[in-house]
Image 1 (cartoon, rainbow, N blue to C red):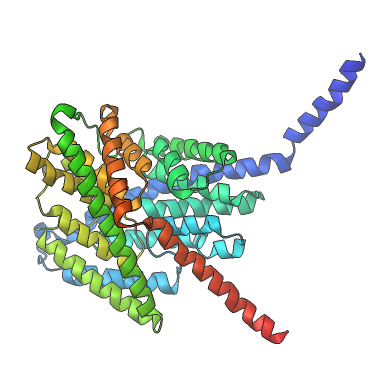
Image 2: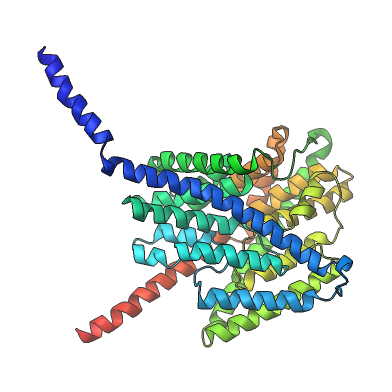
Length: 451
């Protein structure tokens, strides 16, 4: 009897705790945030695809438009996006992944709010869609990471949750998972790229966010593989030279992209310092014009994400041998222009082009070569080999190629490390951290003067 009397108070306290609003409110807000990431990612994907399709309709010959129309539309769109980002949505420029990484290093909530907020969710989605409508060689996957991190950080504020760094990580992983329908890649991305000092206690947050965002995405779009299902398998007896070539050459081009992007971004930032707005608009106009010229020269192949070209290569249709160089240049110019937009999908398209060209040289299957080229090049750009091969496996639904993709990714990563020692996203994240420090010092200076 005495034991029962002791157990009942504990049982009553347990029931009272689970019925407490203080216990349930953070959980409900967190779950709602994760589900909203999935739903908004789906909406973002649909709008982005429609914007890209509309651009091709506008510039197509069927509508009677002149083929040189992009020479007006694309530079104007770049300038418009750059101006809106500067004037109304500062912090929305570029991919969005560097902002999420920087926010995990910042300790003050006010500093984080400059790069992760609901305002930036609206701006990032809207300006990425405008950029795609104007033919920019950008993707929506990196922006989805910033959107996911912003939504989860806002959920932390509403729910009174203190684990801001873990929630940013969870939101970023959920964004990648929902953008590609690749839950495993979302988790690997969180561990390898977003959280290089990953903490085991965030496991539950990341897994729950990815599951709920994935369920929301599946509920709307159903289960699908991003590039369809690849049925071709790497044969090591025949294809091992192709695996090595795609890894080394793809990784070398990926490192070159990263190196050029960092050098150009730093020089443009220093040059813009005297007249930030007008010089930023001039850079955007020049880059937009160059992207339009490349797009016209390629017959329209380099406009947009490059998804259609990469998918056709994965399905066995060889791409023009010069496509990868044109897409490389268009992607680089779009990135350094300062407009919002990611590099995930364009990078996969460049990698597919490299693989396709190498496949023609080696006499190998175009589909297998495209997969290996994507793995090598993407690992070289972001220097995250696990994310590279996992995301490609999930996007193609063929797990028979896991060893070949792992090898190509590791070779791409190793080659990239020899050429460029700075991972692209982490190097860019330091820009946002430095801006937060400068802002803090500027705010502190008047106060110290008054004192």
